[in-house]
Image (spheres, rainbow, N blue to C red):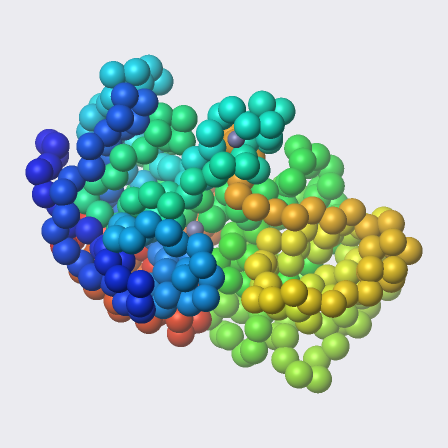
Length: 360
Ligand SMILES: [Zn+2]
Ligand SMILES: [Zn+2]
């Protein structure tokens, strides 16, 4: 495809719920950007927040109108004058956190927590469109044979990998008992990651009696999948199943305050918790028993390390079994024009990932 004058896009044009599919001007790239033709995009929880225009979105999204969407795979169709590492025709995905490259964090090897981060599809126009502009530094070159649908999942898959491996210490996982609290797409992905890294026993919890998610958790390699319902003592079950010791590592993927407390309760002393799930509001926790007396290590997880996580992901995606598991999380592929249906599928919690294809 050549450069377009106009293109189709999914646009949030008013500060209220909903979105529209409409024609907009095609993006113009800057000297250090590339123009990418979208081959697949997947819907994220963040997109649903923007669609619904919930409290978070009302506070967070400043730029209206905005093309939203950020999980993507595509092909470079044009490069800016200063771009040296990419060529027209390269298959790419996007690291969606656009760092300034100059702040204290960026200059001390922590670009993923840049103080002036801009997020694709939140602070600037995103990928639910025929084309989008991407800074060269944020373009990740994909294996040309990688299915674009799978490639579009690398942004959340990178979250999963960062939750499992917040440092490069694989020995934190190999041979260890690990609990994954919450089996949304990123929780499911983290199970597949744990399996490929050689975790011993993997316990997964899923909210309510969600058959779709519980079955997917099994498929990803969980040894035990427990439905988190009233009256089920998850901590006791997991403690007993890990020789009475509790788990070495707990990954909190749900953002549910009960699950956050359970993650610490089921942790063996000296163990580690990674917190990825975002809470709706502040919560109370008994830090003495949860963290201090346990000598627990706690990681807050935000984004992916740039770009260590992407290299780890590239390696894992070379493994066909791992690739097939990630593909299995995609429960629906639908055309862009049916985006409203995709939003409904995700809200129903009966879907894994919903991938949008460039049919307008
Ligand atoms: Zn996302
Ligand atoms: Zn910075």
